Length: 102
Image 1 (cartoon, rainbow, N blue to C red):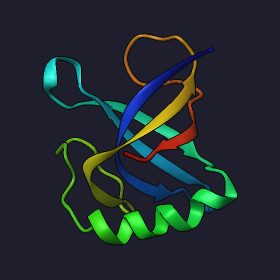
Image 2: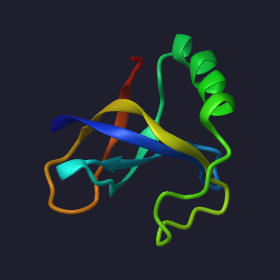
Image 3: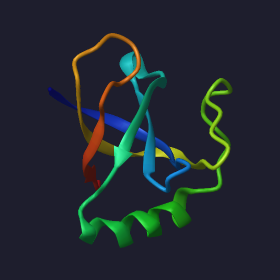
Image 4: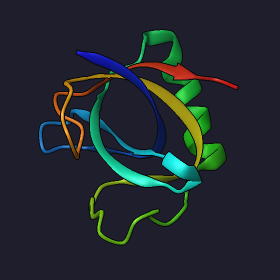
């Protein structure tokens, strides 16, 4: 397992109500879709996340090919630390471990 830092593009819930973070990386200064990760921040971060959703939410999807019907898109300003399997391409078995507040 690896840990990396990604940009939070938005959030969505699956059919079971599980929250997901939609993430991007920024190699070379350009956003590149990295994939989803289970969003399970610490209880104290939940209220901060809700404030952030209201503050930077309401944007369009950063990538036209990313279609999530229930997604709430955010401006790509917030970073998160994610634990994931080492794999090429889209994140695998990823979960958000920390929200990085600047």
